[in-house]
Image (cartoon, rainbow, N blue to C red; front, side):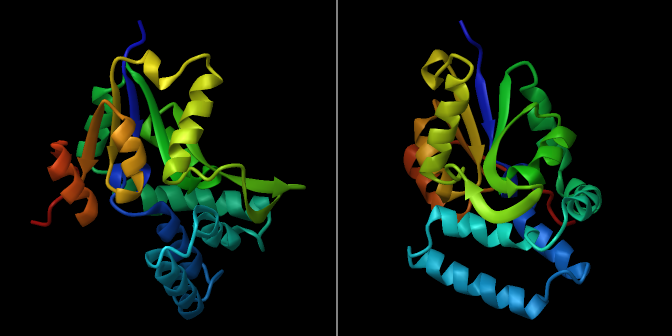
Length: 224
């Protein structure tokens, strides 16, 4: 019989912050993006998102457009510094301990953020498997479009099923499926898990966790 299947969301779950937003801040600091223009565009997107008018593809492609003007060589160099300077300081000891506690199980990070950005983060965290939104790349450059189904909301269920099927398995093969997440956007997959855990949850997920009787875990470091 298979052991446990352990799924981790990344942003605001294992990380204290959002890697997509940190990437934009990094590019602004590198003077590759204009702060005022970027913030205005992001506010327009978030307004549409709150109104239910922005779908998964629009949401994911908003962040992917920042890759388009740059060569892969430049992006790879930036990414190495970005992970070291912006991401690793945002991983708490508690998050690393949580990952280590599941090291004997089949572990995956499952995230809406794109694979280019999150693959080295997963490696640094010691999580060997990653399901992420796949960015379209043509002739060695990012197009700014998503390839396939975004790994967002219900898309996480579809992408996980496809990943498992590629290994001759399904979620039903595992007696325990744990999923750790902070976001109400992950409610569809949390509802499918046998052991859902809300991690430093947003207000809507915290209310849902209370209603469902799900445990709430705090990984964030507290200010002294």
